[in-house]
Amino acid sequence: MKFKKKYVLYIVIGVIVLALTIFPRVESTPQNQDTTQTPISHGSSSNYIIEIKGEVIKPGVYQISSDTRLYEMIQIAGGLTKDAETEFLNLAQNLYDGQSIVIPKKQEEQKETSTTSKISINQASAVELTQLTGIGDARANAIIAYRNIHGGFSRLEDIMKVSGISESIFNQIKDDIRL
Image 1 (cartoon, rainbow, N blue to C red):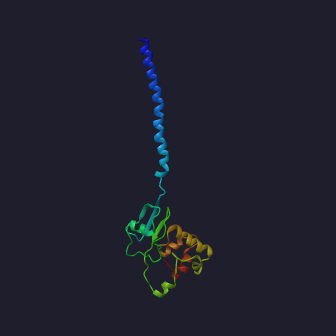
Image 2 (tube, rainbow, N blue to C red):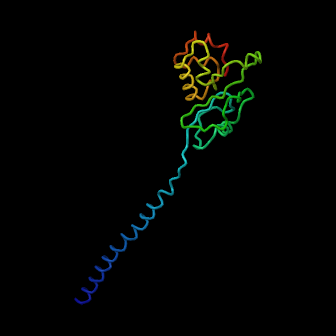
Image 3 (tube, helix red, strand yellow):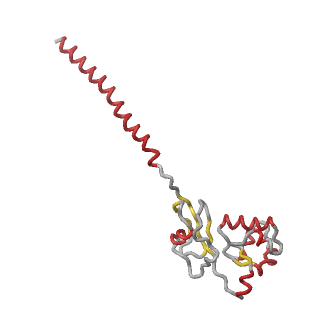
């Protein structure tokens, strides 16, 4: 009987030792597999948060893919209204995270000849902007920086939101500018 108890004891100890050596190996295999799959599961795509307003059907804040272009963003926002002015928009433009896009409204055409000679505050270069009365290099650069950050101007009066453009300067240039 003592022989059987010793024999059973040795078998139980052997099973325990065997179990302890086998189970850690089984657990380490899935961990190694997870580690090698982690870089594959993380794609390079990311999302941007974009605000679109002005002359679109559904203005608002949208989460979009980082490779979305302006024309696609307009489609996501339900399309353009009938009053939207797209002549000076780059519809193929890349978007960036946190961007605010303003789709401007068409201005009533007063005189076709005077409209073509006006300077577009949404498209003009710094050199063109300095042709305006009271606009030097610093103000021209401030206008360009503002429109890059805010997506352009939707009304002529919005130029007064630019640092350094007061109401008196606006009154001096309002007849010489357009969107």
